Every structure is written in structure tokens, then in C-alpha cells.
Image: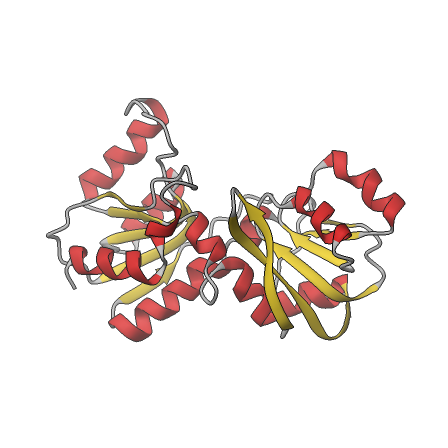
Length: 252
């Protein structure tokens, strides 16, 4: 498959153009030759040097990540940035990044995938960022405790995971992957039982405790593996490319 064809399909499937004025990430092909043939695609959350080296060792032609290496401002290719770019260029490894579009996507996105994994019904958009829908809310098929939700999602437990009123069983849930802790206030306003997100925010904890609100902060990295894995499966099944997942969790 030609790189140009892959880029065009991903841009269309993931609705990347819809977020051009909202997302500071340079979504799309960040490094690479549009005329290159691709046979194997590695998928990962981060375009770290460790991820890049692992993708090269696995023989990938292209690395697809949620977090790329260009974020809304000119960045000199020096230091760590130089090391990452040089490693890719030396190995002829391309990089395709998809940030906010992969959080928001109604079927392939991080939040939609978690909602589907939990078997939620009455799913609706939840949490807006600069006028763009980011997360989803819905109703669990049966009340679930924090432990049951984590087990259902297949989340690894980290030292940073914590639960507020986590021994309760929840029925209505909002989901915002990554840095979604402040969305707990929207969850409170809408009368939800619980917010599932990645990272915690200290300033929200007392408000949650006093409001009897529960928040499951289950890891920024963990909540953002769902989208890249969903795209990986689609690329394998629909495009016939060889794929692999590079798993380098950061414990946060």
C-alpha cells in the first residue's frame, strides 16, 4: 500500500480535517515519504525514542501514534527531538499522529471504545473542548464497582490509580480519556454517578468528596491505548497490512 493512500484513508476515516482549528497536534503524516510503499504498521500511544526504536526493531515501515512529536509551534530539531527524527530518517520509518480526532471518534476513539467495552447504552456525547465533543456518557448494563469496571476494561493497575467513593456501584458514567479530571464538574452537573478518566487533579478531590462524586483515574496511558488498538485492528482487517502494537506504559 502506498503511503499517500494510507494517509488519505486515515485522514478521511478519522475526520482529521474537522479538528484543524481545535487541536494543537499536527495530525496526519509528521515524518515520511508519501511515495513510499508500506507493508507493516506499528501502533503506539507515544512517539518516544523507545517506541521509535521498538517499531524499527519490529520491521515497521510506519509508526501510528496518538501523541506525535509536533505540537502547535516551531520546534528546532535538536536534542531529544533530533534523536527521534534522526532515528526515523535513518531507518526510513514514517510517523503518523492522530490526537484529538482519536479521542473523539464515534467508533474508533478512545472514549467510544471504552464505552463499548463496558457495554454502555444510551450513549451520548459528553464533555466539550473548544466546542468539540470529546467524551461520551451512558448507562452501564448493570451497576458496576470500580474493580469491576477496571476488570471489564482490562486496565493494568498502577500506583497512580485511585478511586473516590470507589466501593460504590455505578450506573451512569462519563468517559474522558487522558487529562479529563476537570470534566468531573460536568459529570456532577449532569447527575452522573462516576467519571472515568486518565489523570487525577488534586484540586478536584475535595469537591468530589464533598459532593459524593466518584472519579476513576485509571491512567493517561491506559485510557489512550483503546483508540490506537481499534485503528490497528481496522488497518489489519480492511487494508491487509501487517500490524503490531508497541506497548511502553509510563505508569501514569
